[in-house]
Length: 548
Image (cartoon, rainbow, N blue to C red; front, side, top):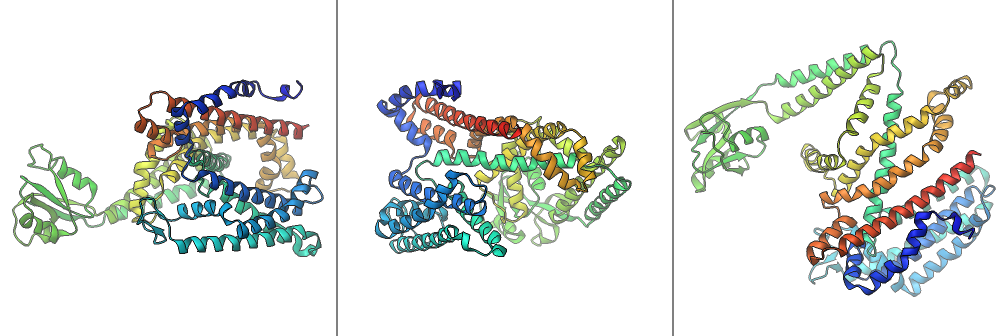
């Protein structure tokens, strides 16, 4: 009974209901199929899961061994046991890869396969209905796995015999070993493909990465809000903003180009690639003079010559929108306009927006005796908190990501997962900033003065005195934000991110089952959130003990 008293009441209810939930999934085929689909259990999941457990266990023991080697004097007893078993475990895993390769190869093949580009990679055999790696590629994967395990075994041996290292290099080598083993563990947990539970992996990874990035952004906003103006702050930022506006005016004053709409409007109108979207929309929606307020169909052309050739060679094309000098055939001019090319217009607008915004922040800061960056950070926090998360995800995931791709000519083409993580990070950073700000303001200001009297800089005072105490205070609300992020990752399904919610929608659309997919998803989210809440409560208890 004493043990039961330490379990949260909500977890007790879940434990009591667990037999009924297990019975439901075990006896109902539709619930079992929905569970398999939502979790993302793929083909050959059993052997892949076995290989993952073996590799992950050795990776965890290796990281704990490296950690023990660095802090042997302060390490608890259980950490010493992990350190002693890490080297034999790595040797055993290497032997398994040599003697019983079928235990590790399914997981290694799965990770390697999904790390490739399925549409362009030459290492994938697409001749059969199910795409697989070529046999020689599989042999290379097996050889590479054994080489990496041998290297990892050598690292574990170095951790095991670290006591014999000389003091000058001991700390650096052990720090490097800890970073190396930590990187291996991080890759397995947050980067490698989980064929046995893809939906859960995507949901958790999106929440964890978004949580980390939003916490970093929140600290940045709080740091900016703490900036204090100096004597020349207004002059410096005012000069920068005026300089940006002057650069914008320089681009706006560049010569414009003259374009004409020639031919007829009874068919499609050929538009050159690179024509500003605003001009193409004017023609598409019939907003030019003499259009008759009707919409027209447009057609893309590589250049002006091709656009004019289509008038004669393509029956459905009757007109073209080209530069004035390109109309050498003498087609009748229906409409003429001039505009600033994108190579001048885009930087002009960018410098104008940044310059005007910075000038506004500078004036607002001067009026209220605040730093312009502090005003900007406060404005960002207040604005983002007033926008629904779905709107932020759609805005960053669709138009903003597309604009970045166009500006960089395809150099930055973010995946849907990356777009969703950035969107959630930006949206939750405002709430994180307010949580951090409340925790920092709870610290007595006398400690700031004490840090200054000790000769610590502002950054050292914040890092060594303020932030450690503030983090203990804000641990409960930070845990609540993480649980909220797990639930809000379901919104990423709008970007076709195949998390648990998206897989639920796909399965429901394919099976036409009315209740099983939704009930299964709800149960899974309840289990995940209660597990995270229990873990966060454990952290709170540990933090409370440290404060005593």
